[in-house]
Amino acid sequence: MDTDLTLRELAYDDLAACLKLASDRGWPAEDRKWGLLLDQGTGYGLFDGSGALVGTTLVTRFSGEHAALSMVLVASTHGGQGLGTRLVEHALEHAGCPVVSLHATALGRPLYEKLGFRSVARLTTYSGSFAPGELSGTTRAALRADLPAVVEADAAVFGANRGELWKDYFRLADQVRLDGAGGFAATWRSVDGLAVGPVVAGSVEEARTLISDLAVGADGDLKVDAYRDELGSWLVRKGLVERGSVDLMVFGATDVPGDRARLHVPLMQALG
Image 1 (tube, rainbow, N blue to C red):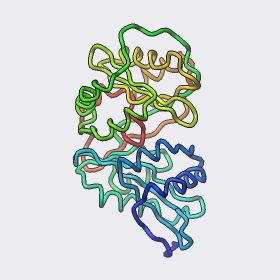
Image 2 (cartoon, helix red, strand yellow; image 1 turned 135 degrees about the horizontal axis):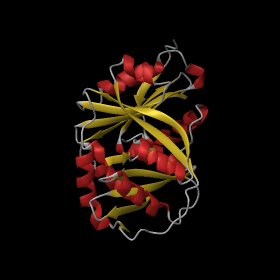
Image 3 (cartoon, one colour; image 1 turned 45 degrees about the vertical axis):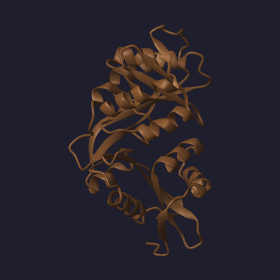
Image 4 (spheres, one colour; image 1 turned 180 degrees about the horizontal axis):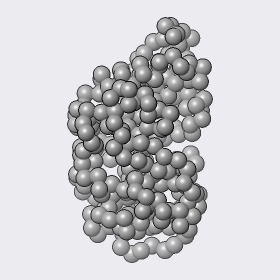
């Protein structure tokens, strides 16, 4: 193991190094996403003797009740040295919340299970060109005045208030749409297309309508992370292709909190 490593909190000035590390591991260099995570949460980085960033993780805390763990990355030159374990253990020690959740790849799952996480759901990614349609007439674009209602509904579904995150997300989002039954959905512009998330709705049918309306006039491919096979099957029929799956895992509880039956698509994998 390389003992000449320093672990410290990441600053916004480390963004370029984070993007370089992401590229090293074959992850897209999503500056807007990393910027949001660094603004909203606390990042931890491992730096080698030359000052190069060789490992990261981020913790985003919500109202002291629930923390989302994300961006666990170790440089290709430092694999197999236990650095991922060191980073996650440090993040858990400083999470400051009774419940911690994350989305884990098949490669990362054994590490998280060893540390006490348990899988509670499966999330499948679909992307591609969404078959065009017309607005349903049952949803509308959200206004800034709708933010308190969205925050309240999101808190009920997620199990913790994420008001500060939503203030920033309203600015990041390409669009946010509401339906008449208290459901809502949003998109944000990633480096490889338009990412949908979250989608909160009382039924799969209502979730489909929100996604369809978000896709009207969309430029480029659509990416959707779906918790339910029924929604995924519909996305395939609309032209998207299944790209892979991850596990939703939780630490400190037997399940994630909130009314998860209404959460069809997370805000983003890094934030739950």
